[in-house]
Image 1 (tube, rainbow over the protein chains, first blue to last red):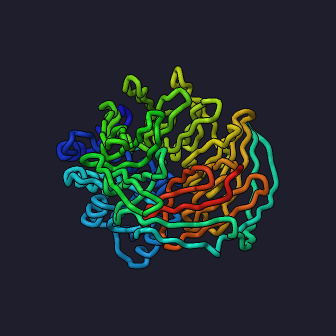
Image 2: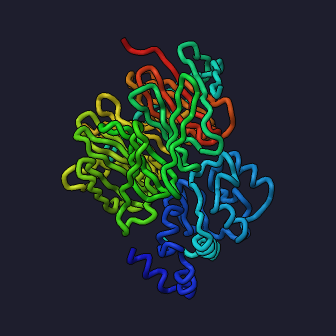
Length: 129
Length: 343
């Protein structure tokens, strides 16, 4: 954890993120840990179990062109919608509720504060390795 | 009546042919499938059972009676299915529960990796009593994944956020430690000679855990970014591994450190799970083909069982004599495939 903490310490957004972090007191790097088991915010990471999340803001749903998506996300891509703060927040609350049948299996995050911090962090495109 | 039965007439066989190449620390071989399909369904009987709507029925385990219990990852339950009546009996596991994996322990209780509660949960099916063993604070959001009992009755588990651990049920002492290579530990299995093996999806390795020191010896698959997701031992201690990124099913022989890989049939296979039955036939699930795919190591042929509904997403399989089972997490169903029992 110390490496990631040093990375975070260099970010101007650190006070905001930690102040808002999470209802149960976990750091942002702890909260995003489950996401990073399959995804990355580092644009150079390829061959992941899930799509890369770098530069996600404004990107079309199902829009990592190097990743082979599930049929339900391929259909979402055709719809043309893009990732926004509001959409990502609703997605994190109940991923499979938004996209039934998607390949990712994650039950969602109930705490609004946690989702807010994650949305802020992911859409800023910051990197935790 | 929740039970719906379908006799599949569209199961198919894909034959494979390949070449071998050796090299590196461990030898490996790859066989490319040619996906020549032909009907072969007569000896299999496929039955679907409804789960609780919205539950996202996934990993399953068997009680000592006829019942099958599944993790409702989205409704926070372990739910009993009576395959004879189709009846369902959900048992809520606690606030925030999101069960992922389940096994029946030697104490005849279910042991559950509950990512939502970040705890190992024990459910006694006899009286439905529940107890929890939370992970230590330094392993918050461990993303608990799967567990297995070794032959001494010790429970071993993985957390996808880079955690390995174990519980001694007699003392309820839980040990957890950081996995080598960080995030990724997913499937776990025990071989007949009582070695505990796991695979790391993001860490792209197979590892064996020293049961005394907890140290791990790694074996990397020959394929870069293979994405090994689950692992199962056959009756001879040969390990079978489902590779999510490569779409291969691979075999690893611990005695020789030899690997061999087979690409699943189809355009873009995504090999999610693996289970080996008592005949040493290898059952995989392929999200790309929306199918359960059985591999016969002797003939090197695949038999495919496409789901009757889209987006089935079978994330784990297990079985008992004459039956292979999986949870269709995308359709809120369970599927049973029956085959002749060895006598």
